[in-house]
Length: 331
Image 1 (cartoon, rainbow, N blue to C red):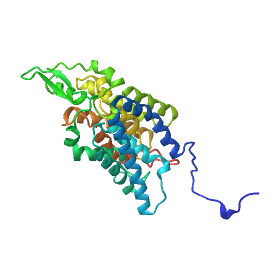
Image 2: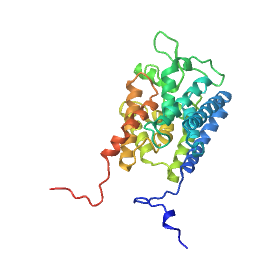
Image 3: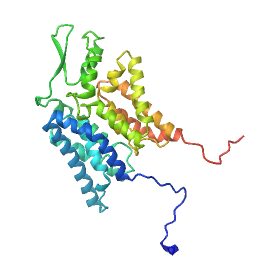
Image 4: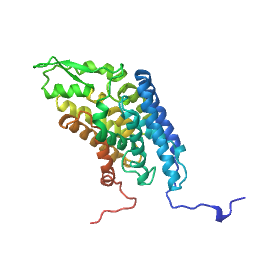
């Protein structure tokens, strides 16, 4: 016996059904990112755990509190707040004071997501909003933290009045060598192995590029993310780095490029919907990343490159809007 007409829900076409739910997609992304996060904990120990717990807990608490105050249904079970907290932690150096991580989680959820209306309405990637906030607010505090034993200051022989040049990350030393026109002889090819498997300088998401690549390929194979964004992003980074006379492999492995290309720039809400637009979006992320890295004041600008393209995503989508069915070009 069929249902009464009064109980049927009628909506306008097209009627499109996806095989994956929102929470299911979040779980796939969490699972793909989990090996890199766990390896960061194994490699860096307690500081990594503190950063992960602070970012995730503050993100979950911020979303729960916002929904409670606004008297809206709780949305923690969709997994988006958990993923935002994890992505934020992967963007943070493990030496970050816990209270800065908490502030980043609160800003990521409140200012990066909930003020826009919640999941699906935000213009910018929430985790990167939190990362940009703490970087601009407390860069000096973060960089001044005492080493924890696993972290050592990288150095390279100097060619002038100094005995050596020291820096916190491989990107910083590469930038110093580039500014000196290669006078320090910093061997970029020698950095491939630590960048791929166990890099202890930088954020949690820089510990193993190999695990990030593996997780990204799983998401592409599963159809969770579109290959066009990471290919456009990483390919542009490599080509432009080579064009500017630097090692392309080093430049795509170093910094947050792999985390950004596979897990940040591919965010459904803040990237274009059209397939061609996604490729252009990825290329744009790579262009701004390279320009910032080679000509800006900071060697690591992945956060700002993706945020900038987030703002342009609606325009890029509009430029590559598909042809309407039944449309005939006028004479």
